[in-house]
Length: 292
Ligand SMILES: Nc1nc2c(ncn2[C@@H]2O[C@H](COP(=O)(O)OP(=O)(O)OP(=O)(O)O)[C@@H](O)[C@H]2O)c(=O)[nH]1
Ligand SMILES: [Mg+2]
Image 1 (spheres, rainbow, N blue to C red):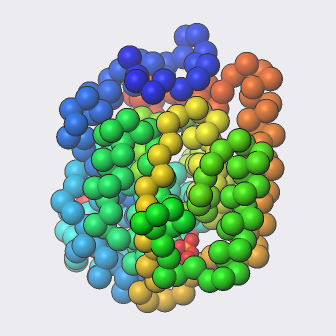
Image 2 (cartoon, rainbow, N blue to C red; image 1 turned 45 degrees about the horizontal axis):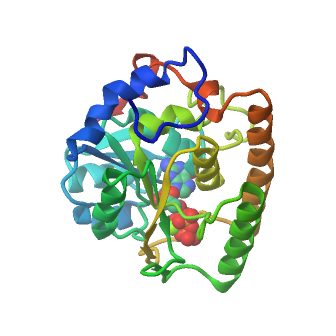
Image 3 (cartoon, rainbow, N blue to C red; image 1 turned 180 degrees about the vertical axis):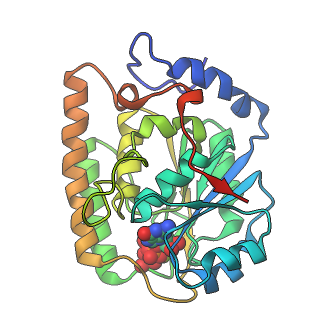
């Protein structure tokens, strides 16, 4: 049985069946690793970043309709890379598409801009092998740091994680950081927006944007999984400009905290958890098309 069993699984849920199958990855202590790289116009950065990745089961690049040769460069630098085309817009949708395509035991979320240091991957994997369900990168614990964050964003991020800690009873030190890893079997538990949902005007639905990191963190909390923070040093983006807009995306994160709090309360009232709302048997999880 799944060791760090999430709380309140509904009777008859298929989750237990699925975890039993994939538990083998956890038990082996040599789990296979999928690195998911969302990339929107990151050709220059990928040339530098992809060669730094350690050998893993698979690297999935999720392309955001790049126009700068991102896909071509990725294939050139790493011929066996898997390319997934995202179905809507935004980093959140890109990650959801990458997660669905993943076939490894562990997923590592890895930005393409050079801000994540591939040498930290073993620390994330160790945290998972040693009992965590979700290894959450933190720039603000001992051993962590950032060469990238501005004072304004630091103040904003601090306010947001203090708010989360107060409202969710957590002790997160870094809420809005995108370098994380978790067991792939937890993907259905996240209940991320359906990648096949129709594209609305504007191209995005809630959860498709930069609020994704907060959504993932708070749904992991809602699912009652074991979370361990891993110190991480964020480096500056090598080329190009951030896609993030400090105020607009900061408000999206704030809105996320409020809506995730309401969601968790509503689910608890119904006697369910996030897990039971979207869980599907592994074989029913449709993977997006991949080309290698
Ligand atoms: N596929 C895809 N990738 C995206 C999209 N938006 C951002 N990304 C990727 O997500 C990663 C993080 O995006 P950044 O623009 O660096 O944003 P950030 O790291 O949150 O913010 P900074 O700290 O300012 O760099 C990068 O690899 C981007 O290319 C998108 O709409 N689609
Ligand atoms: Mg970045």
